[in-house]
Image (cartoon, rainbow, N blue to C red; front, side, top):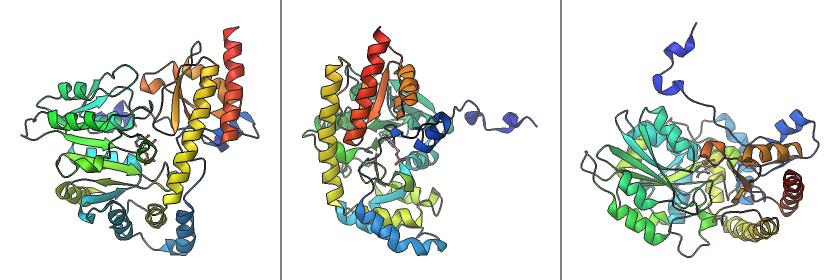
Length: 376
Ligand SMILES: Cc1ncc(COP(=O)(O)O)c(C=O)c1O
């Protein structure tokens, strides 16, 4: 049977998502005994201690279905952000939230405006729904061109994705830039401004920057705004798949009606509800990443490698004279997993996640040798 014949047209050209290689897979494939993973922007300090305690206490309950409304988690988020629960929704990771929004809003005649060099899942979500992704170049320095996104909007524009700070460049848009962008968005054929889907997956890391905007401050005046954040990054819960979003009540209501009923699992809910109260986890991780980024910048500079200053827990650097993919493969053989950036149209760039100090040292040591050898 020719299965391709019956696959939905929009799903036919799909390439598999290239995830960061798991440590155990690489050990198996290359027979290595020691491997460090600096590929998926996880928190090397580990999960929030409060979350781990909550998981242990609730482990025996896994024979129950989870609370389909994430009641306790929403209450915890409501308390943390001083926002009614009717403005809050949850999902199985930011990845699912992107898809929930796409399934709810995107139609085949819609245009979805996206920046170049940004998180790949937005274009995939548009494609899944058969919508047209309009891609806008970045400004110099790999910074979002928010006014360029405004200019790209037409009557057909249903939504605009903004990642702040951006993955994989680590750059961010300022408060003033975001405010101007939201104001200047034109009305579409529905007589409303396009939805703005503001992805703040690295919010806590970027919060250290003085002019970094907290998207929540714009929610009241912008009913077209949907913001989401994740527990995968600073809270160290990537393996549990849990994230949350803020939007006006009507949008939340529709998301609630259309999402799978048990999308956030029982352990994820209790862990996330505990993690959101864990200030120590946030402060400790912010300080740690700040310090280790300085170390990486200093060492990359010594190696005369160009890099982009980052407001996140990863750094994008230039791999010349090697292609990013080549450098990625060479580092892989040395037991260091980073991320090549071909699917982001950055074929001479590599992204490295801030690891533990000894992991960062190992990465620099291996990089030094590889770069030296490649110039011979
Ligand atoms: C910008 C951005 N958005 C969303 C996500 C999805 O995160 P998760 O699905 O783990 O919440 C990621 C993960 O790397 C990301 O970098």
